[in-house]
Length: 477
Image (cartoon, rainbow, N blue to C red; front, side, top):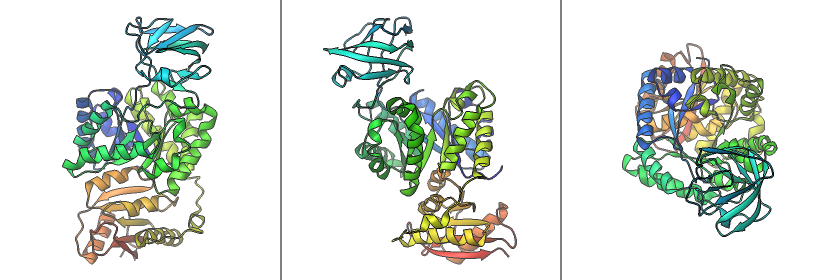
């Protein structure tokens, strides 16, 4: 397989749960598998997680598992006929007190707080913005509206308020149950839907750490940026998280489609500056749900995310329920690889005016700089926590980074880091023996051969987290 820096996140679902197909998808380039807790039972997710672990072991490659929480259900209720067609100019009532099934005049609400959060003149967007209604008045528990942009509205479709402002908590009772499920199989990452601020992420992290304590596990926390309220607080959310997801669907509905590309670039840049990972998601290869090839616009969309420096690009329905899950992964891997050939490397500019107060971070930056100028074949980070590899991966460089660790959890977590290939090595605690084992590991895998130069970082004493304090330049004998 061609070396590719950008990682691929694929959502598992009915279309991709066959073991043979999943194996092909992992071999084709899937680095992280997303389990979408908006669908399926707890047992479904447990079974799929075990399947991922088994197949990854068979392929000989560690794949991270990301549990994506559903978050608050800001949705309409159900209709007697399953759906209605709303026409422009018609009156339509969203009634939090309604218990009977909906019709063309009114529907109940899953989100009972809506009448207290909207007022006359507010614009509500239903079904990902395909239907637009304007609030005329709020009378008791009923929100009276006029349809501006009509269309088909079916059961449990989402509600967004233009400009944001719905206050549903980011974590529901269902999410708390789902966190316990995800920690039972030690999900490597947990994605939190609709966080508004750092407190939402801190609460989610605390719940995850408590649920994972009996397994000696700590997952990485990913904040899905999909609320208008999250944008002014982007930096505080980032600092409380291990990474963010540019969740372009709900975000576009709240802030408008035209604002999203600029926000995407800003989010990717900010995440990299703060040493966090970033996933770009939603409709990346949407047409491949039903077609065997992507549109040229989709190719450009994926390529631009790569050129912006995203760690990973994500597939949702394309692999969960689409007709061409394997072909979609193959196409996405090809686009990522081609786009990386046009990257603009500015390594020196990255370091200008920067100061590094930590020894381990200084060593990581020294390895990048030296390997770049020497034309090294590889950069090798012997790492316990994965921090050294993460810092290195925040800078665009053509030299591949190989992260060697003796911890499987660290290896899996690093599967999301751009330009990092995590490898397991049961290293000796003696430095010289460990360095020799690392070189043999690289030679056995065909990464380096006689005469090649590579840079390697490690710490003394070996195995102490945060202890990277040595950079060595080696030539393979």
